[in-house]
Image (cartoon, rainbow, N blue to C red; front, side, top):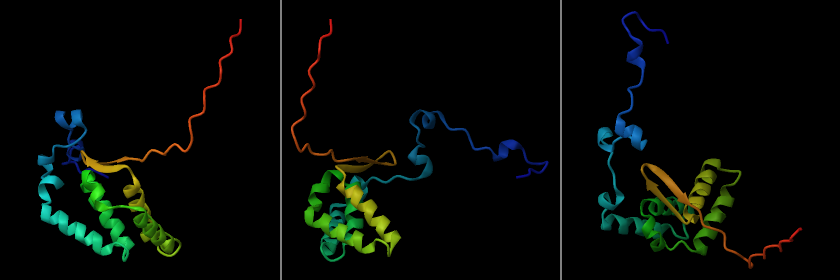
Length: 153
């Protein structure tokens, strides 16, 4: 990009970060006018209607079900148990995933992402980032004993 003689190099440089931005790594939300808190901005009635939509899709439209379940479980991680994400759900979503494999990669990747998020122990939004806590594998056997130590003199 060429600058005209009336332009200075300072006019195209990004503004320096303010002290609070540097310290926290994030911009102040009020500065951007973006402020949304699901606990505050989504009513109990909204929650119930979203859950009704989820239930309407259960068993009939696994694609929409996986989208809605993912959204609700991330927006309300403490209420994930209320979504009743059981083995039937995971099997239905996996069947839809296989149906889309090789025929609709956009749908396949979307459902694969949804499946990984709702299968996680917890997924939530913290400071503008989605934080995923994976489920830890269950131990299928007793831990192996430690080998004996030999003393060499």
